[in-house]
Length: 197
Image (cartoon, rainbow, N blue to C red; front, side, top):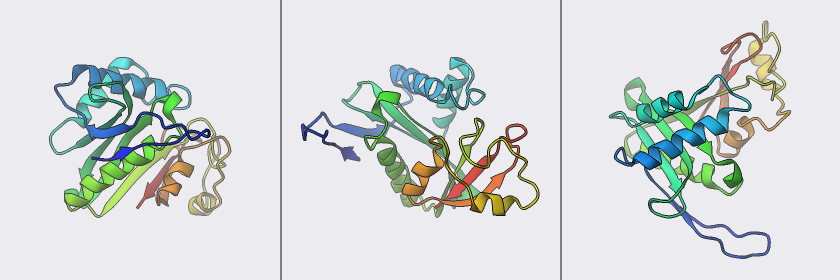
């Protein structure tokens, strides 16, 4: 179990939170995770989970046999502050990180980092060798959003700039590297940026 505490600027200790598996029997936890997903992607990725029902279906999908799902909670049974899912590919040698979301008021406190670390730990015990994530740019948050990436797709990716807080910067701090890009994955000028570690 990963436990994390953090200090505010005034060095006041705040309550800790813990990373635990999402229990399929925890109806409130599943609903909270779905609400986080719906709210967290609504501004810049509205087509990802456009309804709460689709977000709920995504949560249920991460609870399928062979997949992984972890949540961050301040207290056992308390509010879900973040959640992450993982699914195996290539006979379990490669895993996809999908999805990852942290409550807006809890971002920047290490929760996302701890969720990824917990997922990586479990994948390692299962024999996984590579973790990958696709991080879309549907709102021109990077220098490769909103443009035709052909020709020389990889040259454009090599010069990518983060213009408005795109998540690729977070993943780079965790050791992920660019592995490619799928131009127009979500419509013209809306690429999917592929990252691995």
